[in-house]
Image 1: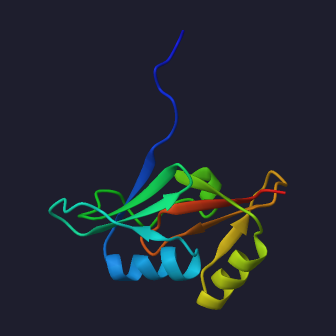
Image 2: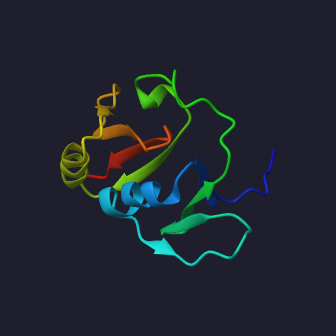
Length: 124
C-alpha cells in the first residue's frame, strides 16, 4: 500500500507551567525556541532539523503519577544527539533522574517536569 505520509512534522507535549518547562527544554536539553503563532493559550515551539517539538500549556487529561519507571515503556519522543555525556551531566546537575536504554544502545530516557518522556539517542 502506498502512503502519502512523508515524515514526522512535530510532537506535542502538554505542560502545566511553561516557564518551568522552558528551563528543562532550553537550559537542560539545550533546545532553541522559535517563534510561535498566538493560538490563544501559552506554549513554545522548538526546531530540531526538519521537525519540531511543541509545548502546550493546557489542562492535562493524562495522569503524571503511576507512569512506568523506565520511559522506554511509555509514550515518548526520541531525539538524536551527538553525545550523551553533556546531557547526562546537565540532567545530573539539575537532579533529574534518567535511565539508560535496556537495549544496549547509547540512549537514555528522562522525564520533563510534567512526566513526558524524552529519549535521547547518541549518534556515533
